[in-house]
Amino acid sequence: MDFALIMFVLLLVTGSIWLLDRFVLAKNRASGVADPWWVEYAKSFFPVILIVFCIRSFLVEPFKIPSGSMIPTLQVGDFILVNKYTYGIRLPIIDQKIIQINNPQRGDVMVFHYPENPSVDYIKRVVGVPGDTIEYRNKHLTINGKEQMQQPEGDYNYVESGLNFVHTEKLSEMLGKKRHDILINPDMPNVHLGSVADFPGRENCIYDDESVRCTVPAGNYFMMGDNRDNSRDSRYWGFVPDKEIVGKAFFIWMNFSDLKRIGLSI
Image (cartoon, rainbow, N blue to C red; front, side, top):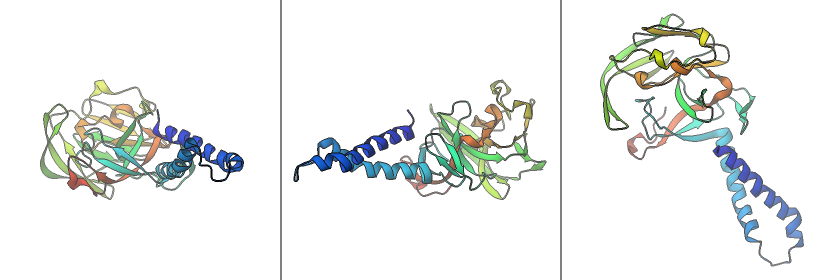
């Protein structure tokens, strides 16, 4: 079950009990008689649940990184904070935007509901905004005909689940005005054609053995993982609609396996 929905139900239950006691039960209770246990618990938990629900719904929400698709920017086990208001205020539970603030920009690390299964949250980097033409060819990203500059940073090795040793090349890439690190495996194809889904807007994309080229529809975004050859992203399942956006990742607050990552900005 969705955690936000659980919090909302608990908020309704404890709030209703608190109101019932304040305006009905307390008036009929003899002076000096202790509150029933269920009233005492509700009155204690209601303000705590209300504060947590508001913070999580409108300000920041914590997430844990479960996979290596965003290495080296994010490591498996990172606990991150996501800004819930920078792209607009949304009503909790129904995720309906009521106030527009900012639009996602190229280079943002964004959390969103996975288009193929909205109950699952994904995190990738925004590489294409509405109207952009994105091409990924020979491990290089081109946006609107302009190749995004890459600078070699040496080898990068990591161990993924199952104790598989992975050797890659680390590069620094400029995405607009933002610089970030990516990983490339020269022995892997640019895209596994057999894994490309029949997604909404598929007609906006052209695939061949060497590249993928897509024009981003209005109200949608093209996402890619920084671990380019170990990321299932917009190359495979298409575009992220604005309505599926959760927020912008901005801070690592914990990693129990590597305490040095605490406090890093994203």
